[in-house]
Length: 345
Image 1 (tube, one colour):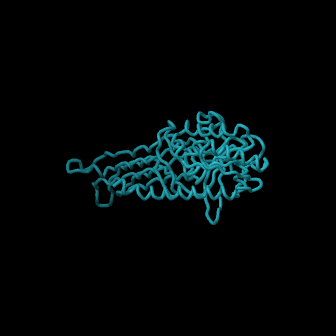
Image 2: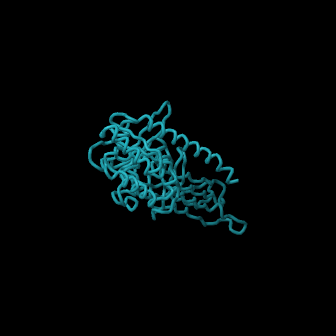
Image 3: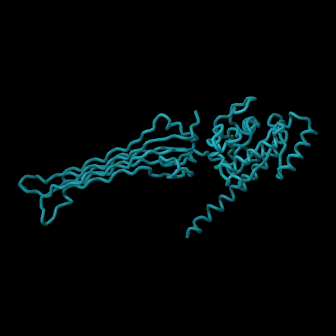
C-alpha cells in the first residue's frame, strides 16, 4: 500500500429541505387550515479516527464529499427526513486543517473520536408555522439553509512510541527489519527509505511501536530533501533513537547536525528523551570500535550504545534501554492525562 500523509479534500454538507406550502383538504372541510410540514436537516460530513490505518491513500483519488439534501416538508404536517451524512475514516494521528494549511480544526489521536467538519443546513419551515389569529391562511414558507462547504487539509503524523532518526544510510532500515517484522527496503545507498515505516518491537515480554523515518540532511527543517515532510512524524514519537554510523569519519558532525535540524524545526523536540546508538560496529575490529565508542560518548555527554544489526552484537542491551525509556514516557503521559481534568476544574 502506498504511503500518503497529506491530502486536500473538499467537503459539502447537505442543504436543508424546504418548508411545504399546503392546506388541509378533506370532504366537508372546505376551508382547512395550513398543514405544510418542515423540511429535514441536511446531512453532515463527519471525520472519524479509526485504528488499523496508517495512510491517507483513500483520499488521493476521491477528494470531493457531499452530504445528502434533507427531504422537503409535506402536507398533513409531515416533516421531511434528514439527509444522509458522509463518514470519512482517517488514521490515528491525523490533523484536520482549514484551507490555509495552518489553522487547526481537529487533532485526531484517539480511535473512535469523531468531529463534524461540515454541518448540514437546517430544514425550512412550512406554512403551518405562520398561522395566527390574524392570518388564518398563510402562504409563507422558509426554504432550507445551505450546508457548510469548505476545503480542508488532512495531514497525518504517525503515532509511535519511538522513532528512528539519523543521517541517510545510518542503518535505520536494517535495524527496523532486524527487531520487527517490518520489511523496509534496504540498500547500500542513501535515501533508500522514502516513506516512514512502522514495526512492533518485542523485548522481554514487552512491546512498543517503532517508526523508521527517512534520513535527514542539512536544511531538512526548511524542506531540503523533503525533510519537513518527515520531521512532522518525529513530533509524535515519545522517544527518539538516534543512530550514527560508526564507520563514517564525520559521525560526530552528523550527530550534531541532526540535533540542530530538530531544534530549527521545533525546539520542543529537544525535550524528548534520546537514546544514541553507534551502528555497524561489526565493520571494525573490537578494540577500534571501543575506542571510537568511548570518545564519542565523552563528546556527546549521554549514554551511547554500541551495536550491530547484522551480527546482533549489543542489540539486546540497546532494545532494553529503549523499552525502558518508552515505558517511562507512557507513565508520564498517563499521569498527565489523569491530571488534566482536575486542572480544568
